[in-house]
Amino acid sequence: MSAAFMVLVLLISAFLRLVTTRMRATGEEIARATQSVRASEELQIHLLNHNREEFLFALTKSKLHEAKLAEERAEIARWLSEAEEYIENEEEGVLYSEVSESIQSYLAAREQISRTRSPLDASTLGSASLDAAYSKATNLTKLNVQQVGDPFRAYVPMTP
Image 1 (cartoon, rainbow, N blue to C red):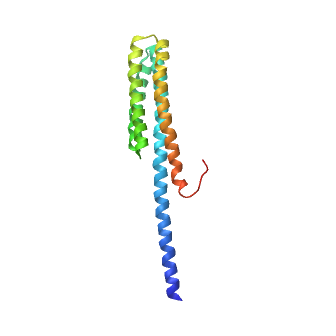
Image 2: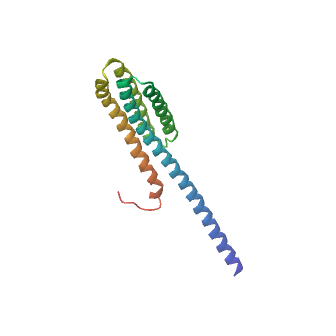
Image 3: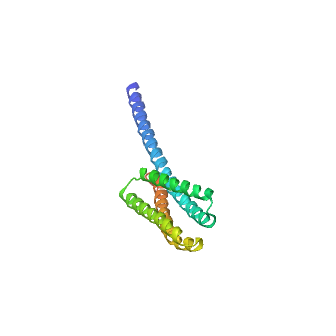
């Protein structure tokens, strides 16, 4: 009787060890995916902030807006780098490359346009490159949000 009880206790403890190890791994996976979502959302925020500051600087030529422009460029670079750290698969890598390229195109276009056009023209012409960069960043966010839910799908069947 006691040998059977010991075997049962060992089996239960092995099972609990397995479950807690898997839960920890799943928690880490979810945390990583959540950070990836945050990085792509921050990219979107700073793209919009940069565009606004570019317009305000073109209107006012204020040192304040010029400084904020530099801050926003730095934040875009920071969050782009952060997003790169969370690439988990080929699909995300391809999308990250598209995001990075579209952001670089946006920044280059804004730089060129703002030096040669009126503030209103620059804002209008810059919108297309902003829209492209923002759209790519949105796609990255959507993919990352989907990945946050992926660990749960192994345990709970979800309807599409």
